[in-house]
Image 1 (cartoon, helix red, strand yellow):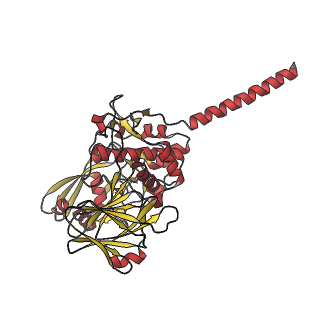
Image 2 (image 1 turned 180 degrees about the horizontal axis):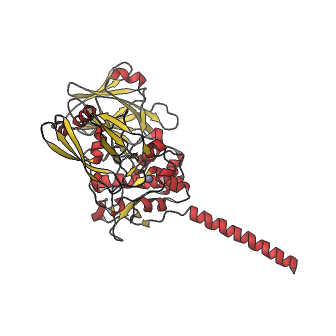
Image 3 (image 1 turned 90 degrees about the vertical axis):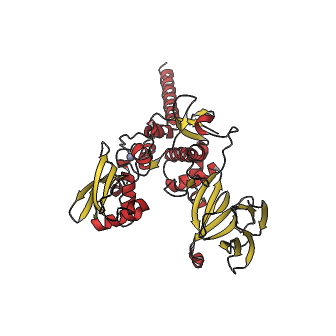
Length: 446
Ligand SMILES: [Zn+2]
């Protein structure tokens, strides 16, 4: 009897242990369970068939484009095609080391980059030219102001096709048309180290997908492209930034976006994110103009635990008044009308100290009020980086001191280092996203 009871209690202990481990695994790896349905057409303008079109990413503007098509597996040169939209022609271009596209005598000219032999040319009207790689290959490119720099250039590979479009007599725009999920491979890998916890990568992926779809379907930034490949939108590094862990995060969150609003009438929103909020995220309104509940600032206790200390609290910066005035005037033509900045006054700050508005007075008496974030971006330099608009300005007579600086970036929405800490604490991407985008819900749109 005693032996039986001992045996029974052993089984019970093992069973309980098994149950605890199973519950722990379930709690750590809760699958994403967004409602599997499309967004309402009137809220996102998604196409009726729910087929998401490719993202159009502006890679840059240049006078000289060097391109090579390479096979994805062997990296050996591959064939590609040129679609001349003006004529509808399709030209087969044989595999070679490198080609050079430039404009000359009102034509597009494609040259062999090695010997400058003219391969083909097209008249320039309003038309675009599209480069289409052969199957299972990608286009590598380098954009150079000076063609002589090509030996030292490091070309970057991009999935999808490449469109070039005349912008002026001097340069043309280079636009990558890439499938949304392929685009995210190059964004998540560029915006966040692939070594971070998978739930952090998943949260970043959903935020990035939401951000780009907002600009594709709700608020286009430009007729020719949806987003830039820089921090002005979100960083997109193409093939070199892809990583198997990023691919995993993209695949497990496929088609999932952040939304807000009543059930069955949810709206997509620009899911902004930045590196380090500095302890409090920022309302979107003073930075981007939107007053949305998911983009409401809130205390963040997480980034302080793992962010680099000189980024979470950045060191004091001093700029002479002349230096500061010159930087402001260089920012844009409207600010240049101040001629010289003789007075700077912070006119609005958030409850916790971020500068929301700054009034600038010129030596001609003209006054301009600008957003705190624009002021920061105007005066920040590589040598003296003003990492955020969360600072105190002190007038010392000949110079301005920027003290008590906190955080890195605009601070709206997801805080990337905070997201990393939450993931390290064992929280999943649903926990992270609902913390940084309050009252948001996840919806699977494709
Ligand atoms: Zn934070």
